[in-house]
Amino acid sequence: RVTIVVPRALPLAPGETLGCTSPRVPKDVDVVVFISDGVFHLESAMLQNRHVPVFYRFDPYTKSLICSKYPSRRIVSGRIQVISQAKTARVWGLIHGTLGRQGNPAIVHRIETLIREKGFSYVKVPVPEITPELLAAFPQVEAWIQVACPRLSIDWGKEFSSKPLLT
Image (cartoon, rainbow, N blue to C red; front, side, top):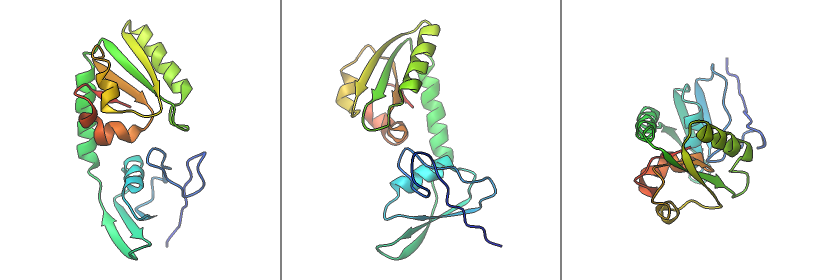
């Protein structure tokens, strides 16, 4: 028996996936077929649904079906390492992404509250785009938290800064 599920992550349309917003599929799903000509959005779905053992990507341009695997164990291990590095930070940078709907103000406010409760110093930086030059302009910051594109920290965090970059 085959059941087809078209998941949804609000405010997106059913089946729509962005690099930072992917729907969760039910726990009993054992295969995902993703229609896309690239892997960026597929990887987002894979990160969100690590319980799914098999992902197939159908490329409508080449008409090819490819079995895709994402190194989620390696990614999670790398993120744990970055979090561990950030634990010693006393001066934090808080990036509030202002591009589209990426930077949720309620999350930024909650993080500010937590930083203050811990007695840490921080600088809040509202920006539409995060660049290595932006991070380098704040040498006093020992670790960054960015509320913008979660994939940035995962995919390019180490390339953007020698300081920990968390989502």
